[in-house]
Image 1 (cartoon, rainbow, N blue to C red):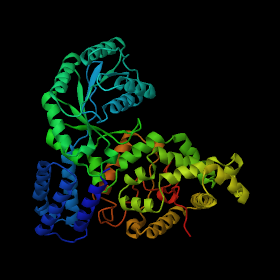
Image 2: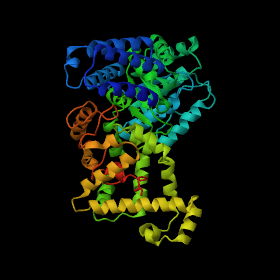
Image 3: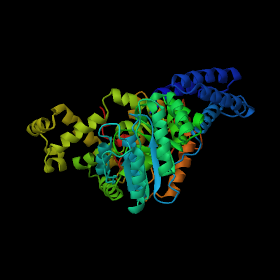
Image 4: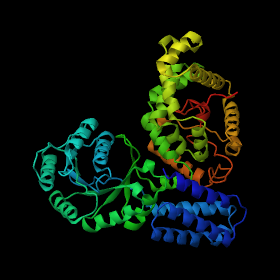
Length: 535
């Protein structure tokens, strides 16, 4: 998400943070580069102008010139203005209305309305316990109604029975009636799209709106269309009136033009973003977290939330006990790998960690990616129960059989076993002699220097992560504040990670500590699968 923009802005701001003092000319030169980067990212010109004007106004003030680290002050100003541009406070789907709350999905054909409707329905049903009814009003696209019915079966959400020959307006009327009679909390109307905005489409939308009285009208737009999505949003808003936006295919958007322009130009909040094809690949849009990602500061709070969702607390506690006693077999390793896959794989996790952008690229180049996880799981699955519990049994003939069964070779199996031994040794060392933290710092330092990231791990700031199994909203809020401090040069920082700074803050959640369940056991990246000790 926003990789190319992140790279550009990172290198520009890097030049500022490395200096002791800043002149007005330095700020002006940096702003010219930022302006160019935003225009290349397909952000609307009026938005870019407004953004750079606001940053210039604040950045040449006395507060910056007289501050101890003027470069970091400018980064903070850029960050705050980005948050402002994206919408300051995140907004979710508003269900504060008499049941059934009607949510109307509109947009062009191919933007992902039907899939997004099913994702929202699944989210409301599973997370909030709402009774949801979905209805397809698309009578023009072949099998559109059937598609929604099948998605309903996948997500366990009921859909309105299909009656051939009904008009979209009649279906909308029937859906609202069925929602009332069936005691549903939410009714989602998936309307038809066109390849372009035309008069019949707008007239149909207006008629559907009259008969269904929707509380939310969500415009679904493809983020890859860039600033043209802004014109689309304007047209729909003028004719139908929209209450919010859903941007799809955000995971493939390296530039971020649509996301950065839409809120600023239309004044409508981006409520949700689609981050993949799976039914759970839908996230709430948090402006601050997105701004953090764009500036390479990571997104710790989202990582923590993801971990809390995907990690079984009891399993994690049992695993921690096992690790403390120094027992760590191949079944445990397989569990760790699966948990990492659930959380978005290596790429997803690294993308949310502060200052890890460069490391992510180097890892991909070294072949440490999610495909490797799949191969390793295949190897472990091809072993017998006895072999998984006791890897020492694996001699040449057994390796030959496992390689044939998993479609790999003996070298891959040896790599896996070497990594497992390395992780096992580390667990033992951390099991009770009190030397774990020191060893961890040494391992991380060695790993970082091997990958050309020596400066990143300075200071050994690899503190512990809170136990996610016992996390409550207050702790999450505290984490958020800690993340803010980490991202903006607050207490505990030895520089801004990813933006020319030196170290990482001590106790930064998401980067290690014996209490991190689901991320390779104690020690964060040092204990991650795929990071076996290299000799």
